[in-house]
Length: 229
Figure: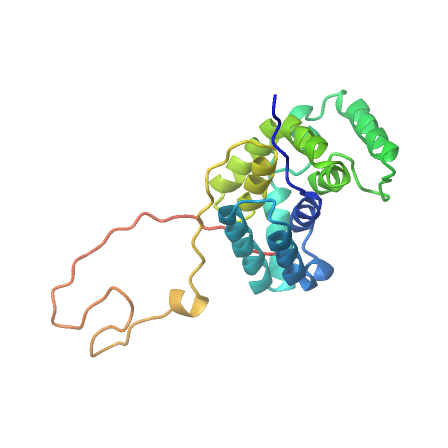
């Protein structure tokens, strides 16, 4: 039976590993390089590449402090968005320790050794390992994690986070399906806080001049998540 060739994805996996890592100064300095690498390898569909472009642009727009604070709040404040994979499988059970040891040994067999304080089930680390494997083996490895990736993907969508695009990309590389990620950019702060003039009509969007009947629009308040990285 004919088996279709799986495109190279090593560089894409490494870029996704970095994008899902803590957004320190070094990461932010290489955002444009990462974007170019994704487009050069073209392991992802044009739709996913556009989504990742938006994620990279949103990180680049933030200050260092905001980017780092948003990352911690997003990935360290709830179990469903945790990037430590065994959190979704074993939680705090006794099975987590042996699973960690087995995974670390798998990495060592491939010549990869963890730095002090790094847990083997951290998704960026797992993706670094996957990037060292041939495309077919890398896809099969990602496919084994598809259920966990889907949990994180939908949790990020629920939080209206652009980071969902990175998980959508991983699901695509695994051969699975994930719905498109369409998250509008936040309005500039100056526009959000703009106030109409006290007299002679209103300059704010959606309002009319004085002495004109104006409809009242009731809008449900929505909670928006800030971007930090």
